[in-house]
Image (cartoon, rainbow, N blue to C red):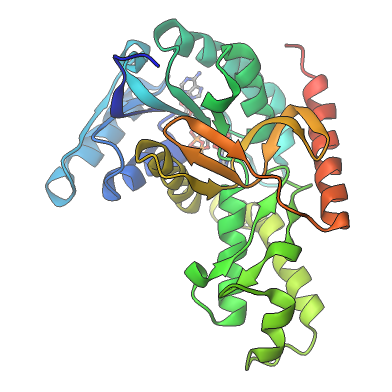
Length: 319
Ligand SMILES: NC(=O)c1ccc[n+]([C@@H]2O[C@H](COP(=O)([O-])OP(=O)(O)OC[C@H]3O[C@@H](n4cnc5c(N)ncnc54)[C@H](O)[C@@H]3O)[C@@H](O)[C@H]2O)c1
């Protein structure tokens, strides 16, 4: 570990909707004491930094400014949100070509100044770009993380919370696999107040006439949430910013939190040499350990299919 890293410094590359909102979430939640925003559009980064800085008297002390790649030298965490975003009707995988080119430049600029920090990829398609960043950067796998399905798992918990009338903090469940169309809800491990969902339903007062249909509807809403939001407001940024801030907090505060981030698969469920999401212990080392939890047979099969689908797309890239 580079002794010159500032353990509370975060760089956000890309000061668009997701990058600027992430900086806001970090600031409001007191994650990091120095935040630098970098964007090809320097005025945008400058304007966002000024706007954020003007709220400094309402939050914990934090230094927020617009900078350049040399400002990455001592950053503990580098969050990449730069690149093209989905347009209505586009899938995340449609963005591959546009964002691969952008990432080749960004990753080489990062490694010129910083070889020891943790890279957190948010730009879509996040699993493909996390894997690309791992390959291009030469960083060890524990220091290349994608936001993966942390957002989807939060959407899942929040929809179940609403459906079942239980606070989201008492609803536990994971979405694994691709952050995208082949993602997999892990119903077999989903629980409310420590009780498996199939055991919780009979003791719940709510009368879900068709439980299986309600649950299927929830998975499908999670998978299609981004399409629906983009159709209605053009972009998504609040919930993803909170998800990224949650991952950043787990790293900066050395939490050993379990989050469904995307990272290099090293034989989990027989999958390797691609990056996608599984429940993972996160701390100041980045990825501490990927948890190979006992999945139902059909969940494991769907996870492997998701990995295969990503691998086929990654192999089409000329890296
Ligand atoms: N992983 C997730 O859960 C998740 C959720 C929402 C959005 N996203 C993704 O995040 C990305 C950003 O979305 P957005 O809504 O902020 O888009 P945006 O268009 O608002 O912002 C993108 C920013 O990147 C900057 N940029 C482009 N090329 C750059 C480069 N080479 N170096 C530095 N900056 C550069 C642009 O100037 C712009 O400010 C998209 O790929 C989107 O699909 C991911």
